Length: 456
Image (cartoon, one colour):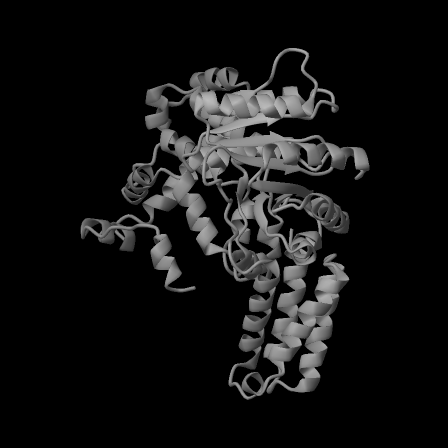
């Protein structure tokens, strides 16, 4: 989302590094470029003004101007001020002193409230909580049915109410009763939205707030709508008193300024961001990590967290040994492909790695999901012997595999050719450094969160 902003800011810093010495003049020029980059990214003009003034005050200090590495200090100042604007610390979800905790999900129609409610439930389950969902949107056709389908897919409890019940307040009251009976510690209330804010909507939400006394009122903002999302968040906060924001579609192509402005305008923290369509594509918002990504520093901590949550580390170590010993079968190839797909898109992964944002040819690379699905189907159509020994796959077997996977023989041929080339390349490393390290008993592992924290 922040690609264009990141690219322009990195250009400013590169120009500063080219200066022999930092002066008030070239710093003013850099600040003009930073201001323009933020405005073009759709950051609220008042927020831009405050941010530039804060950066200018610190960047033109004697300590920075006299420094041997002034451009690096300016980068640090911009990062610190961006982080401060976004909230400084990660805002945690608050819980009631006595369960159940009630969380109202509010926002305009089409912002993604229902899917965000389901994603938040999925995240809470991972944290060891037992959420209960309820939809009180009795106006939008199939809104309650949509949440019911999502809840069943995720295996999360949902209160659907008596047949024919169309009173939002009664549905909310029934959900609270059921949560006590089932021992659920959190109630997620998916409320109704409108295409615009009106008194009827706010009156209904006010009634629900009075009845439920929610610990959190989370406003769902669509990042793709830019300043409209900021205005809506401000109005909801004035009328209802929101306690935080869920930002959806952070993986989109919008300029991203709304994301940077909401916290500064409303004074309420961004708590979660939606990063894709999958049920687990929601994560806490980390201001410091987002600031680093905007400045092209990557987000290694989030990358490691994602790997730790997604990849079976024991299986990864076994695969590493197989790669070094050139014992990598088609079955291993398929299993690795399935694990890597869980990490998300190539673009999102590259965005977490320092310096990768500047590589346009990698940044714009897209992986065709249909091709990946086709590869998995082809390997699944093979017998165990064929997966372990690709050399026995003759013409007759190839035709059978193609028919079984719903593909063409040419697709099977291409896969086998690519696999053979990969094995040949791996074989060239045999007896080399990797093999020697393995024989000496060296162990390879991903750095832990504690290891990475030392370098922050």
